[in-house]
Image 1 (cartoon, rainbow, N blue to C red):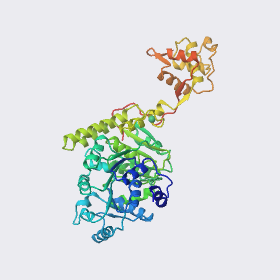
Image 2 (image 1 turned 180 degrees about the vertical axis):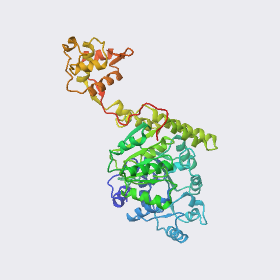
Image 3 (image 1 turned 90 degrees about the vertical axis):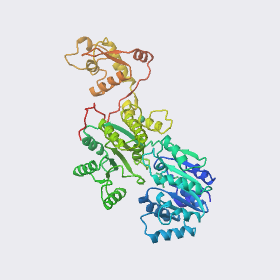
Image 4 (image 1 turned 45 degrees about the horizontal axis):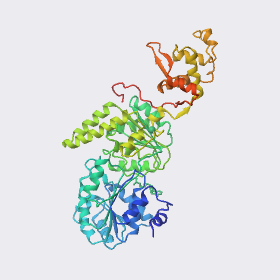
Amino acid sequence: MEPIDVLKNFYGYHAFRGNQEKIIQTALGGKDCIALMPTGAGKSVCYQVPAMLWPGLTLVVSPLIALMKDQVDGLNNMGIPAAFLNSTQSVSEQRFVSQEVCKGKVKLLYVAPERLFGGTYPLVDLLKSVDLSMVAVDEAHCVSQWGHDFRPEYLKLGELRKKFPSTVFLALTATADKMTRKDIEEKLFLQHPRWFISSFDRPNITYRVALRTDAFSRLMQFLSQYPNDSGIIYCLSRKSVEETAARLQENGYDALPYHAGLDKAIRDTNQEKFIRDEIKIMVATIAFGMGIDKSNVRFVVHTNMPQNIESYYQETGRAGRDGLPSEALLFYSYGDSITLGRMVEKSDNPEYVQHMKAKLDTMVRFCQSQKCRRRFLLEYFGEEYPNDCGNCDVCFQKGSQMDMTIYAQMMLSAVARMGQSFGLGQVILVLRGSRSAKINAGQQSLSVYGIGKDKSEQFWKKLGGQLVQEGFLTQEGQGFPVLKLTPLAWEKLKKKEKILLSMAEDFVQPQAETGHDKE
Ligand code: ADP
Ligand code: ZN
């Protein structure tokens, strides 16, 4: 059997996506690999398919104990012999699984890292007696102290590598900056690993960032666009999770809270309801979401600035896994960066504090930046993204450029014919053929008088603003700013060149900073 046959027969998919096939072939060829793939790209297939082709056992190390059962049930339903070992099982259950593994009846064994070396029967001893073909280390960024999700038990995986020198290791993660990448390679003692870095672009996600003023009413305005859709709202504190969920309920939304302070049973029920579409909105702290496989999440809202770009990207990445248009909206305030800075400072490792502060600074820069959001994000992850995306708030403001040549010519001519000595208001009155007393007979007799009747005053104001912003007009003079044509405008008029402008409506546009938040 070939990898593609496994994919077709067991999963029912027609083709591999992205780097999947290359990763599988390289691993099957006996080489260590590191796969960086965004959430939803299909990391599991990368180790599940080789597991089916190898004679021995594939061990999957994952920190997500809560998800193991579902993953294993899913595999068993597809006819793939899989099992898991973790602290949620009874001793006899664990013994049964161990026996099955020894008999070679299990192809994929999921374990939590602490189970490998700890406990009464450390798993390493068992592994020595079986044919271990591959070790897949999921969420591999957990090995790095520099990541946002460090798990000390992951460091022990290096020992595993040394104990099984001829086993192929495959490390997988959806988030890793440069230092984390280096850590994955070094701390896991991977042997000349091949790197597979997929594009992290999520083209179907629209990014928006706004200063947090009138947060709740703007949240309501945002949600009104999604009356029947699923979404996640992330809040910084448990308290604000509770409050936001309650207020949304009062306003008729199907929302439930999720945070680590809730009873496990309640947390699980709420999560389950969300996944099954029984409720629409999950209001949560960042405790929610890791490993959640829900494809139809249409929006992810952050009511506060996340700690770093990695977290932000991972959390927003939970939107639109089905590839359909989705939105990520982030509200921030300057207060957020101070609060987060204080949280970081609680650590007594100065190097760590410095590192996390640098990450926080980048997060702040992202929020304040006037650069295309997608470009900022992808460049942060080391990817080249040569053009602006046209699908983020910054791009919308710059505009999906529309051909405004005719109207721009009308306005530029009007400014010129009026002797470049009037402001925008007067120019618009002339263009719209106003009978206002402000218009004198001379202006009424101009060829441009009334040629712009069919467009609203709003339209002309926007157009005028754009002509100024794009450098076709200057506004000079204090008190009564007067419009004048720039050399660029004269040239465009003379050569009859196209003029592209942004006329898109602004949405949740950041207001002027007020200094403090209303919450
Ligand atoms: P990740 O772990 O990278 O977030 P998953 O492994 O959970 O992603 O896969 C995300 C979804 O994509 C799953 O529903 C999976 O079955 C599906 N998937 C993976 N590979 C393919 C493929 N080649 N074709 C179609 N769907 C795929
Ligand atoms: Zn953009």
